[in-house]
Image (cartoon, rainbow, N blue to C red; front, top):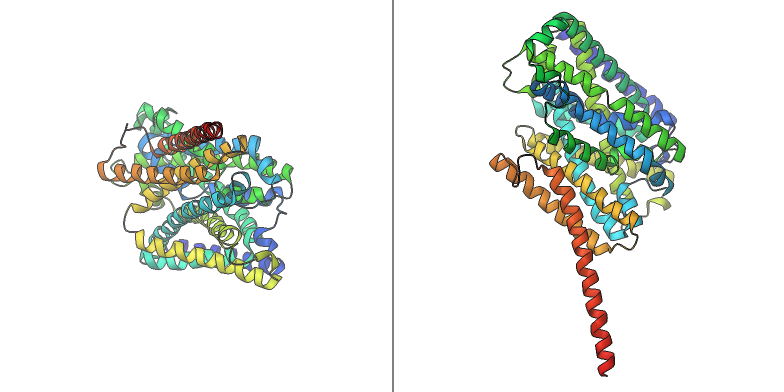
Length: 475
């Protein structure tokens, strides 16, 4: 593996060099939060955020266990992004706001925006932590160091090059990551299938592995719902759309991202199916892609390892940047007036918020790397993301929605989602039905709580009005 290690190190050095060169040219705060991203830059950042560890190692695990239907994960993501492109990208970009919590604040109220910002920040830290753990796992496999050291080294690399130039650097380096990821995974899949032969794959695997519904319709529907709702409130994926040059760029970039992300799952699910033949008794299917590395020649192992690193890094960097954006744009607005800072202080605060966000993710990753807790946190993050969009949508449709009701609904949904996931972790099943996942309960809780609170408030208002009229008549 020495050749592979050397080439991966060269790749990291190349990415760092590109980041430094671009960062020197774009040494201003517009690089972090500016509304001037082109279609290519929006696509690079947005697609990179969606094509992370879950879309590669996660889907390959589903491919190992269920077959080609595991591809529904990225197909669902593509559907969600397409819905964003067709119905919301133009509207969101028109606001001129660069955070999801800021948009919620615009349509519902400032306090509701603050609460949603905290919840969104929690989801970003959860996903960012999962990417840091993935970096640690890959580093441990490649460099034979401890997971903690791998997280520190890999995380520091991501934080440094993200903090150099923000969106601009992420966009340019993600172009490299995405090309390496897509080309690398495609070549690996083609070579692996050719080595085995399609006839062997077709005969060695059950017929269900070639069906698009073998993973279960409820699971597919859950993914689609979570993706449609989540695509419209995923800060890291939505931020480049909010920072697009104009509405037309925002819509076009969203559509391109959808058609880039969706097919990736077919490739990674196919790799999982190949792994099922080579390693039929693998105890932990999550390791199917790393195990494939040992079965390929050094050239293919190198391509695949770089592709896996690219997938994780291309997601981790937008996540960390988005955390910093929310901290500065939403969380600290009552303490500091960022807009009145000179350019030097803006850059300093932008880089500082990015570094702090990355450090938090690294600390959490080191603490949680040895267990499965992070998976539960990520599931909670996805459910919250979808429920926030339900509440935002109600605010868009009905601008008279009460701010306090929206805040209570957010907190109630978060509480129910936490209970749902803890119950599943402890008992192995969801409280109501095996297929009624955290996605379903989060959406249902958001809808029911919002409607119920509005009903109670209207009833209370009607009761107060009647009592007032009676009082005036008696007087």
